[in-house]
Image (cartoon, rainbow, N blue to C red; front, side, top):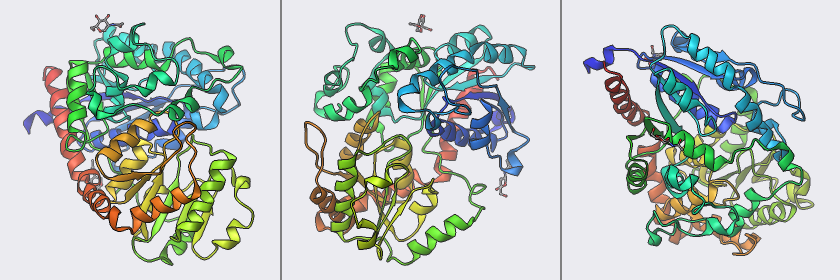
Length: 464
Ligand SMILES: *[C@@H]1O[C@H](CO)[C@@H](O)[C@H](O)[C@H]1NC(C)=O
Ligand SMILES: *[C@@H]1O[C@H](CO)[C@@H](O)[C@H](O)[C@H]1NC(C)=O
């Protein structure tokens, strides 16, 4: 590959959420390992949290901090969605948009000029700036292709006719997708996300997420997906058709070897618990950083885990007090409820783990499939409903049955679905399909070769 002799200089600028910063940083490392230079721009605290540089890549990845702008009402040191109360989440977009002049002048003053910039959905103003400066533009979607296909082409996202406002609007398969695909949200999956806080208008950034998606996709030369062509074949074809521009899937970017060297005491304690259980017998339960379970959901989930009989490890960051009385004592010998940030990748990688009860966040689900774990699906908000449809259609997970109106589930439904997925005869083929995903989602060399294909295009279109 002689064209690789040309090293690119690539700027990366993710949205201010850990779930975005991390995949951007993983991609940065994959690109840097091929010898390309990366300028990774974010705000100071976000860089501290995510930009942990392996020693032998530190000369190739340059983290650049832009000060977080002062915004009224935002708590101090809150620079990412995790630190900002739900009702104020739009203020984070206000702050993000205020980074525009700083970023512009930084890019203007870069010598030599970078070849490419890879950005996220929120920075709707960035494609225009990059174009003025003659920097090539790539939109990197940390969402799977089918979710972006559901959102639709930029023209639809910007049109009055196709505007989706209420939860109902999201429950129909859009006209640009095959009706038979069933790709739509359930009402309760969107109602939660669209729920308005009374003060929210006051905090508004003046632009919807849908418009941001439209402008960032439309303004890009190419679109990059954190997904696999072999898994989302038809959906990647769909986005190619909808966007009419080159689309590249780079795999799910499993963390490289440089990562897994630390061995802290917290992990040792978790491992001690996991070590007590038989191979493939335990269900890992976690819903990401944004979902907060209601009282009833916490109770039904807990009672379901109690009834299922399997060992479990449940990450419950918020809402410990909603657990049923005496729960901890009753499940003491086989269940752990963990209320801190958990090393998910390591836990999922432990041999005792057989399944993952998940909110269907794309990164989490992909991580688990990369380790061959069967999924038990329980989506709540954002893109999770569509991800759930995809994972079920691909037969790598089983959804917990819900009440169609309010999304309620019973403890029996939880217990039965966990049993089916982990040990039941009807779950056997799903378990086998999930295990096969290890080769697809877990393969670093596969992601490496996808990245080679992407770089080949990035280098060629730059005229080298
Ligand atoms: C970094 O170190 C790892 C392991 O020591 C090695 O395999 C890899 O090739 C190195 N990467 C670069 C860009 O030098
Ligand atoms: C979409 O992109 C095209 C081609 O770059 C451009 O002419 C058009 O103005 C863009 N539309 C919007 C709404 O930005």
